[in-house]
Length: 250
Length: 185
Image 1 (tube, helix red, strand yellow):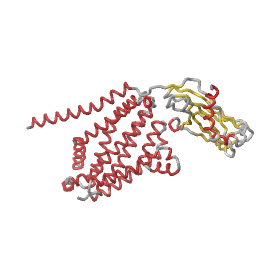
Image 2 (cartoon, chains in turn brown, blue):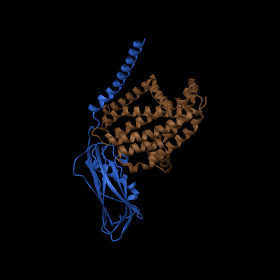
Image 3 (cartoon, rainbow over the protein chains, first blue to last red):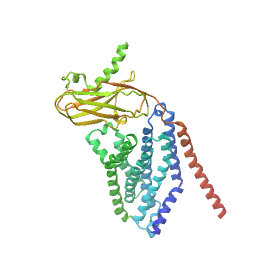
Image 4 (tube, helix red, strand yellow):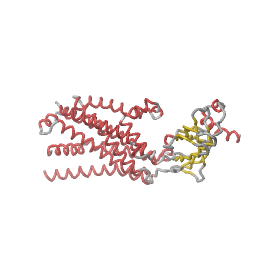
């Protein structure tokens, strides 16, 4: 247990002290700042409803965090393999499963930091407080589930692929597949196939939940099915990661 | 010219609500349904969430079943008249009245979030299964005044302050680390 705690602490502290992670946090902040300044400097956008602006920001935070997750996950095991540090890790008292858990924990920790960084922006955009608390809760819940799903998938790919490049390319394909309904737009998703894809896609589930909670002010009963779908994917991905991570090899 | 200016927006609204002009002349209006959409008396501005009240009355002597009631919104901005998708304006797009007894009045609230400014018109449409013509209420016109909802006084300090704060924090942490390292050496 103490080995596991040491590994978790090492992963998080190491990740936070790496230059690229810090640059990434600053970059995300700057992006949110640019977005917020655009809202007030553009005449049409400054007339946007607060809830709309909040929804757009939560969507931006979610997509950015998923991209960061994809990179961190793909680098997780394959990166250690490429840097020749996986051998040292495997020789230590921790097993492959513990390594995968610590990597996933690190991804969730990074997500939590990104979420906290977005809170002041959400507060500033909410204005008179319209749906602020529900939007924060919705972003935290849907974001955590989506990050676990994408993080888990990218870690599985990272275990299976020998190089980071291979894991990133495959992960990116999976990511594009998951967010493709959003690229198509709502009008093209209005038929039966579109609605079916919307219903089974966990990322679309998260985006639709944010829309429903923030813009339409709909309660938890409206979100149960989408949350159920996301939870199902989370369980499937975590179970797969549990079994696949037993065979972490050089 | 003035008559034309008044006619154009209403024509756009009627074409949008009926779908096509052929549809208007398809059959006679069933006289046993009356639909009314009540106009709001208060001035409206962006960000408001007013609720329009609709009424569907069975004026006939037979029970009506499976009536679909839906709201239609049209922008009447001069030169930019067009139907609007209710997607972000209202979460409640349609209501199904399963049964309406003779003389019974069904009242519905239609909450709307006013997300943009301009001149708009609303109408309530009732579609009865087995009839060829929908029944539409009179157009309810309303103006939405513009209002800046996103205030720069809240956003600017955050947008400039947060990245700067993080940068300062990182520099401070790095400086502390360097000092500790030097002391050790």
